[in-house]
Length: 146
Image (cartoon, rainbow, N blue to C red; front, side):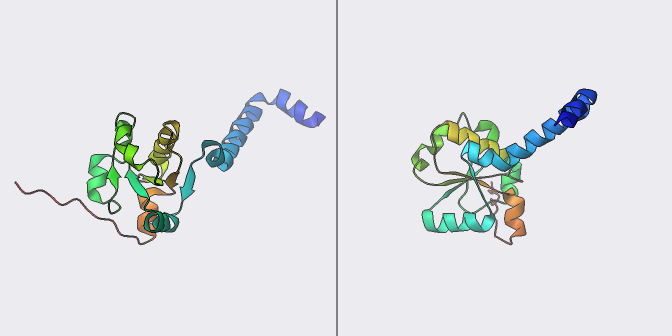
């Protein structure tokens, strides 16, 4: 134990870097338990959609959404979610699966939903990229003719 203390006092920068990496690793492993957000693989998400009528909340920007999205997904960009949270009120008792391109923005959206009292919140692990890699279908918004 003395060697650890001596190392920490002789190399504070390395000890600080080690502490940060260790903290991030612990957060990565325990973050979902601490936040209450359940990550779902695409196959698990399809089961939840089909058997429990889960709502898919797509939080990508408009241009990303129009390139392809999960069928019947509700589109609210992450930047507007807090302001438009009332649009989700009617889905409060249903599971909600947040999705984005890679699973990062949707993780933030899940935290916003939890903060606003939504209980059954899930994050699509890997986002739309994982959905496509699992060979699951996307639908596109059709251009409106003038």
